[in-house]
Image 1 (cartoon, rainbow, N blue to C red):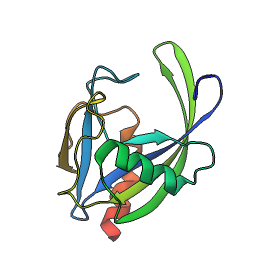
Image 2 (tube, rainbow, N blue to C red):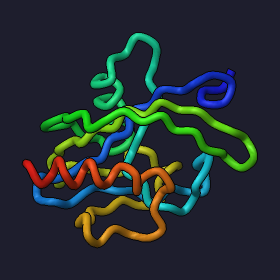
Image 3 (cartoon, helix red, strand yellow):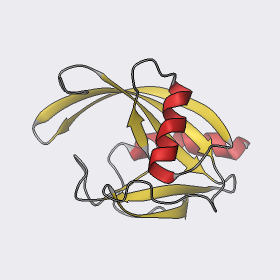
Length: 145
């Protein structure tokens, strides 16, 4: 059985920020299952028995080798889209995560062609198709930090 295809998948999306208005992004490699060559924030599927926060912490370590300073759940989104011609269904729990920018590194070199810090008003192009829907909530949250 395949998550998001044969049954609804649950994933935690994390947008790492430095507390100064910059976000960490990675460029998806050709080894990613979809949207290769685009810039993305980070996400991972929940494992059985994990809390949302445990999923975020595990995935942060796997993808960027970082420990969060602060986790803030932004919202939950029902995501219906297609991967090629295959319909997918995911429940995404979106988090803003403050990290120390000096500690971030590529943790999955097979899936990432590079990482970088970008101000919200100067994000790289092209962006992952789901990212645009997350940015208004992140912008509101960061304006209050």
